[in-house]
Length: 326
Image (cartoon, rainbow, N blue to C red; front, top):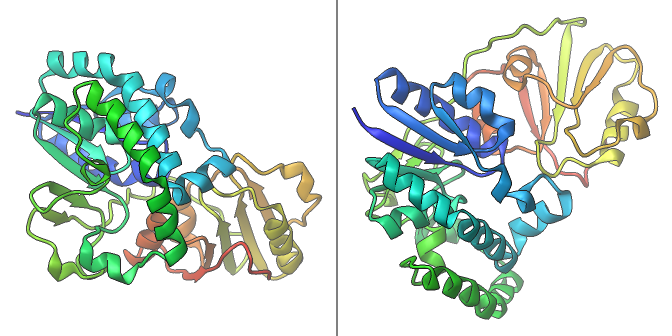
């Protein structure tokens, strides 16, 4: 049987889809070592993998709304952080890989330290992509604005300086594309279907569209009303007190049962009071709630959308943004 090393970033939306794959691999007798963060230890070990903590290397990527928003928009900023983490892990990770001798490394598309180690140590690499696959054809659909392209061009000297830091430590990285994108020869797992993927026909057979990896419902949600409304803005950019207040005001004392999941960033006490038909929690078992919900008000993260599309929920998925008021 094979030895497989998994790497992922500090994010529920990037970790959860991989667990079904890990569970299947370990069930078939493969040895899986999963490098992740203490927040996900229990679910990774439940999937059968050996858990290795990376918390000591990843302080900058803890859920901070300002940093998270900047990572998504500022490629120079995100590259600098990711290179910092890669270099911090360099010695320990390379020693681990030499001792473990994995048959392949599977790394999230953002966990560049996994890909970089595979390139440096000549270990077969598999990319784990929890959003859509990207190439020159799909990129045309999700075009960058002129301002975004200009900012990227201005940022290139900073990006190249960070890439030079990797090169100086023996990483065969030529450009930002080597880190951030998979070439057609790279085996790539996409956690959606070809039917949902833009320009799916342009991707070669090395791209495996394995479909959503959604675990079975393991807990029960008690319904107190005929209709259940679930509200969640995900686990990263969820410090949205005005929006939550609007939800409470609009749905208070109605015929709906409302479950509002606000995450770790919001100050729940600042929401004031709410009536009995509304429950406010930091976290809920989303799969269990979606199985009962009639309406889902969401930021439409990939995991949430795919749970809806696979029939885990019978709800109506409502795409909204923080600028929309109820």
